[in-house]
Length: 497
Image (tube, helix red, strand yellow):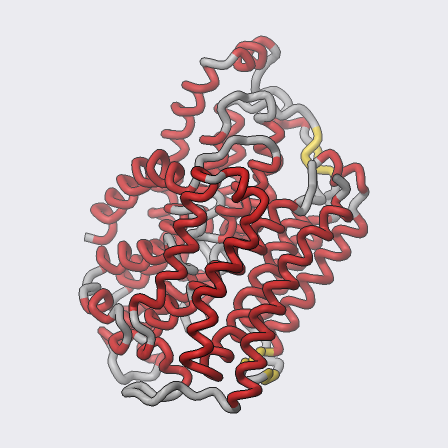
């Protein structure tokens, strides 16, 4: 299918979600007037999380269970009707939410559409488009040694161009190198572990949680102190991967053919076709950096504050993506098997996730006034901060989860102090706590497919290429739990006890 034609199946998903969230949100706000929460101890729209009961997260749980079970139990139905499932759970939450909280709910939905979902899709689409315009030409055989090198390159690149950029850039060369392999799902899984998550821990460019810390006063190069965790984790996973990949490689007939022809030859004879897209990739990275350093005013739309710097960022990413797509020869897209199917799936399913997770995030942001206050009260050591931030980041957006525990740490150690002074004190006397929050939010996003944006996208690209990937629960039971949890326990013992 031609990419241009396939795009017509992707764009409506984004457009419909925006229409649904904005129409319901803005219409409710316009009818009800200024946002206001129901009378209660919290009062005010910003205290919505203090008013929501814990059972309001049931639609979110339903959305997660649908992602986990439907592809396994009703595979053909899910393949054709997953947009309807996402819309169903969004409606189950949104209708009573708007009915009960009126304009406050409308503003929350509009905020989710304009400030969270749309920038999320713009960034992913930009990176997906630009990376799809580059292809490594030459002999690249999928031997265990070559795969280790590719994963290591991706893990190191993740802290420079972000986990999403590195994952979308590396997944296609990895799939192409292993196109003749029979067993390759494990290669994609380890790419999710290393490139889509752990590799992004060294700079604020690597993962959104660290960028939020940078915006709140954490120095740009402070995260380099997490290098020992990076080295231990990447080394352990690459060693395990090498022996696992060598085991499967030895059992395949293709392995004998590669050995006979000189398995790893050709790494030095590779060339990058579509190299002009590196400029567009750097432009996207630069746009993200600019959004954290410039001040351009703001625009208020029905109670939603849109920062000018974020609008500039999104506009630059869109321009970079359009130029990349237009200027990239069709033969590169064809050879790269570039289609919009993976982005279509991400757009629909994450639309449902973003809507239904509104109450979970609001309750967390309410802190001690919310239904999860008991959870925050039990977090009182670096080890607990590591597991609490990581546990929630496995299922929720890791950026607000990081910020929740970042604020909790400031409130615990420096209550009542201005943020600048509190952050300086945290860095000086409780740096291990901030390191635990940072590592937990970044590393444990690998625990599930929805823990971090690259995970789901990489899985979709791999499935589009014909790789039989594990389903939601299988990924956890077979891969993340037995491999990652012991690693995280070791990191706790080494760095956070």
